[in-house]
Every structure is written in structure tokens, then in C-alpha cells.
Image 1 (cartoon, rainbow, N blue to C red):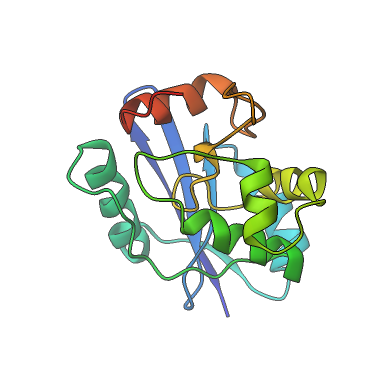
Image 2: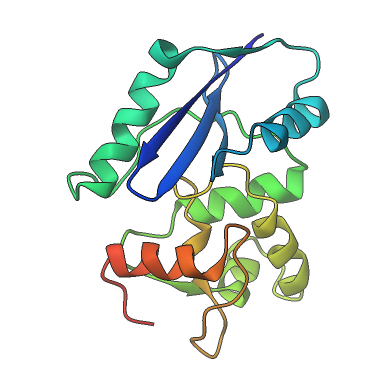
Length: 166
């Protein structure tokens, strides 16, 4: 199974998206090809990494619609690569509605392990499909913005885009 990728620029942000035949598997902000290669070496080394803008066009179109406020839910197939625990956390993230936030503790409770707050934070930090799997909607119990692998400035921009008051 090959991994197809393409980069797309939206204003000051540049995204790298990658997908297999099963679905979207990787998103990077700031188009760092070396990070894509590192992810590929770790999670998909049995496949070939191929730049293919036409294959990725449907994925990119949904991102454009999101930023143009024409889409609040992504309906892309996903091919998430991670541990079973990470996948459970990521599935819980997908269920957070547009315009809402939850805490790390809420996610831990959703997956049935309310003591796993730190582990949930670790799994969220490993989310390979930013924005589509909306880890930006997870905030601290105090209501403060906390960790985001792409930086708190982008997290704040995403929450503002979704008109979320935190």
C-alpha cells in the first residue's frame, strides 16, 4: 500500500497531507518534508511515499471548505497508525462537536479510564491527523489552553475560527 502526499498553502499556513488507499493518515503544519519522511519510516516503511496532488485533492478540498467556513465536519476516511490506546483516544476526539471543547479528564472518562489523564495527553500529542481529529478542542480543566503539537498560536486560531469561547 502506497502513501500519497501533497502540500497545500492557505495564507500563512502550509499543510502537508498524506493518505493511503484506506484514508488520511498524516497532516503536518508548516510543510516539513523531513517530518513526513520520519513519520513514514516509523509507521509506513513497507510502502512507497509518492507525491500525488491529484490523489490528495479531495482531502485538500475539505480543508479549504473548513477554512472557508463551508464545513464543520470532515467526512474523510482515516487510516490512523498508533497503539490501541491512542486509537481509542483519537476516536473520542473525533466525537467532539464543532464549536465545543472538552478537558483531558473528559476524554479519559470517555474512554473508560478516568485516571489516565496524563496518558490521554500523551496520545493527543501523537495525533497524526491534526484538525480532522480535533485535538485542538481539548483544553485544560481550568479552561486554559494547554499543549498543542503545532503550537498554542495555531490552537488559539483554530478555536477562534470555530468561535469557541474558552
